[in-house]
Length: 206
Image 1 (cartoon, helix red, strand yellow):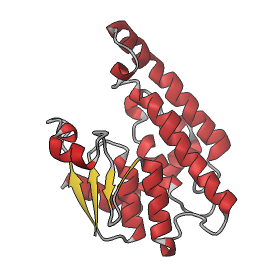
Image 2 (cartoon, one colour):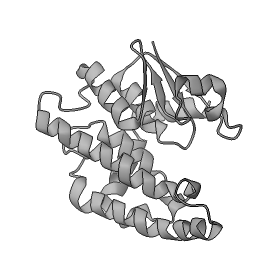
Image 3 (spheres, one colour):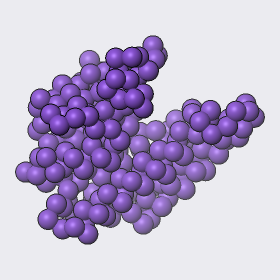
């Protein structure tokens, strides 16, 4: 049984959806960011980074969304969540998830986590003003060059899709109109209807 640590409104949703898509046996443990539970001694013993998600497996704890997504795709090959028989295609999948993690998520984080990069309040305000531009540029690149359609990698649904859906949820709050990106908006709508997405969202809301 896998144990998955998550929190509402975070990137952990991508892994949560993938657990459901894979048909994995798991229990989801919600942390309260309002009470700073992610920095409690009990949780730091599991994930010293003090962040979600974290996935407790029989072999140890995994952190970082791209790693967890790749792990689930390989652990549950029958779910066909990645092109495991094609080294280059699998690397393309990892390239996309890495871009979401290292570039898009970081651009978004400048809105709320400016203290990671600066100390002056004026710097925080400047970072926030930049968010619509940086997030808009990221999604323009995804729209024009990365999202092949109907799914990120083309005809086959992969671990890229729940991750894109998760981060696309942040666009409205970042001052970006998702409808400016028709392919992304269509992808978001279809993802919203998937049973695994509905299951993960229901568990988060419970």
